[in-house]
Length: 367
Picture 1 (cartoon, rainbow, N blue to C red):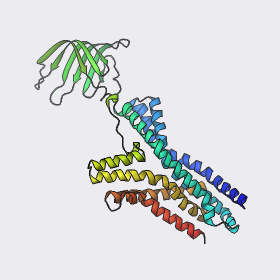
Picture 2 (picture 1 turned 180 degrees about the vertical axis):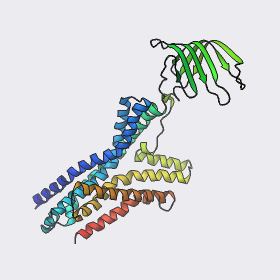
Picture 3 (picture 1 turned 120 degrees about the vertical axis):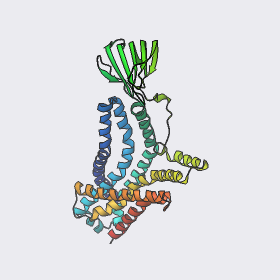
Picture 4 (picture 1 turned 90 degrees about the vertical axis):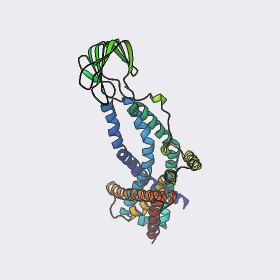
């Protein structure tokens, strides 16, 4: 008898594996498609190096996997048990003395394993990946502007409100000759800087032998200031990224770190709304990993009751259940923010509701 049970368990787990792998590929692709379009846009629209975009993509994988694990597990249960039901294998196993709870047991064990794996990813990989993504994005995209493209006998922009005109440009030395710079002012006409030679380097333009003209509101060029050399910041970078300190938030903290942060915030007397939001983020880190086990409880009995099998049917049912889950999740968070529910109950609300329905369906399937 133990050998038979072991064989049945292996068979059910094997049936779950293929649709689970398909589900992982499907849901990861769905979650990443928008991000991939944004990342590709960074290459062509903002000149971000492809190597940086690739790293941003890699750092996005860990949080995407955490979301996709429970969804793929739901799909695998719907597809596997749907196929077994349509081929009358569920009926055959029940006739052989197996209760439906015993048939679902291997799927429940797989759900516990995926829940543990999701929790591990959420604790060890996701905070690190989110922190690296935020740091790299801030350094290479948010805080960084590309140096201006300098061309002869053409206007080009070098920082906000500044336009240059250059007669000649030496690519080797980066020296510009016959330079005119127009700088917009909050009121009136722009300030004009003319120089025989200039060079842009590290966010500073150095001018040689020129003058500054402040044009009067009447339009007359009255005031001149002559100089031999002058250094002028042109703001090709908003700020030096190395001088910007990293700041952590809930997405870059583990449960232990977030718990300590919340307790520290409470001691500092932060507002109740802010503390509540932090607790919502804290309990979210536990409820989402357990969604995998909850999806097993509802996916297995629903799949076994379907009259049609197939991946398409499984995807359709998965989308409906996932949509319901996140509607309940959003509602629970809203109730928690409004102090109608505690953060724990609010965030775990979809797990309680869908889990209860799943247990009811499993009990009903015993009949």
